Image 1 (cartoon, rainbow, N blue to C red):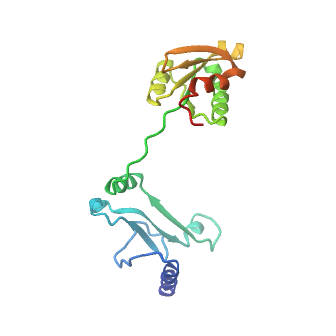
Image 2: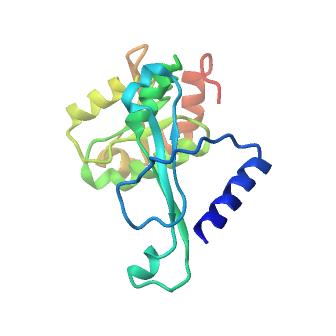
Image 3: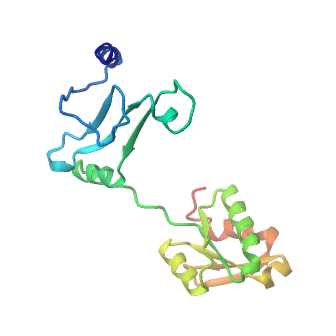
Length: 199
């Protein structure tokens, strides 16, 4: 039965023009697999002993073993991020650098967090690459995050701004800041970033 199943898998791979190599010594470390086990391996010699990028197999009894319904088969695999990075390096593929943020929303008071989240959501809806601190870090730590993200603009929101329905926008390139009504935030950002923004 297993041999017949194996031959069926190979014939389907052939029909789909998927190249493969049969390895009689291939063993997965977990014993719940049934029938097929597989590995996707880099052929780049620089990968050395770390050449397996992805590995897994089929399991027909695993779901029922954990109390699920009988007769449900499945397939699973594991993929290592570190292996992907090694493979990219071996192949000479450079990852793109993360684009700079247009705006980083800085929350000055914990009570203003929900408003800060609304602002980030609105900025993203208008196509601005934006983010905010989600860990309730100090003002100093938030400024470091602004710097790391290479944000062009910082938007400050605290209790005073919430009460007055305003935001303070700081142009980090020109080192200038202005406080505007919330309804004028997008228009002000458009004006500040007009020359370099692509959204």
